[in-house]
Amino acid sequence: MTAEEVERLLDAHGARSRRGRPGHDLEAVLTAAVQLFNERGYDATSMDDLARRLGITKSSVYHHVRSKQELLRLAVNHALDGLDEAMARVQRMHGASALDRLESLIRLSVLVLAQRLPYVTLLLRVRGNTDVETEALFRRRLFDHQVTTLVRLAQSEGAVRADVDPATAARLLFGMVNSLIEWYSPERGGAEDLAATVTALAFDGLRTRP
Image (cartoon, rainbow, N blue to C red; front, side):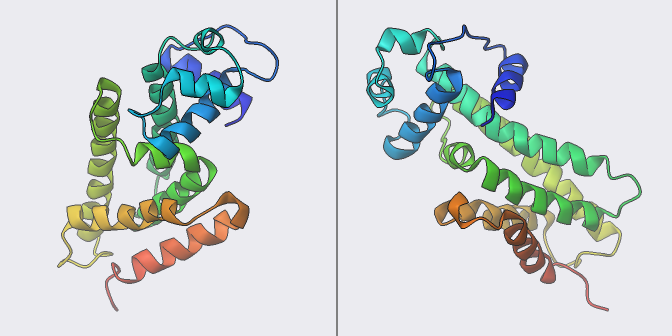
């Protein structure tokens, strides 16, 4: 996450924090927290664990955030905001077919996953055990509904097979995208090529045949 992204996230979600000691700003704290949440699980990670990972005192961690739950909220919102930005972008594709918008959404979503991999990984592991997780799941359901609507619209335009259930297709499309967290690593590079491959494979089976 870049410094600019941290600033935008803080503005958007009301979590402005004071500037910390050099090398231990909010970005560093959030990055370490997400690593620990993914390694140990959110419930099994304590603020003491986070302080030890950073090599600072627990009070220094609280200099940046009010609670562990605030860190979780910032982290999952970073992933969700990326997906919402992708959806907003395709909705601005005026004049494009529903299928073109759907393909663009899948490609952009793969790029979001590649660029925000630890955050998306954490998002996909939330189960609704806290208020933050419940809110995140609600936002995911809204996103899924928008994807389903795009599939249904593409069907009405004759571009997607009529025998495909839109909700099932939406889940399968993003099941493919989300499965990338199991093996993709930023060190592999080639996020654009990966996005193109996923999009091509996904839509070969959905398109109507001439």
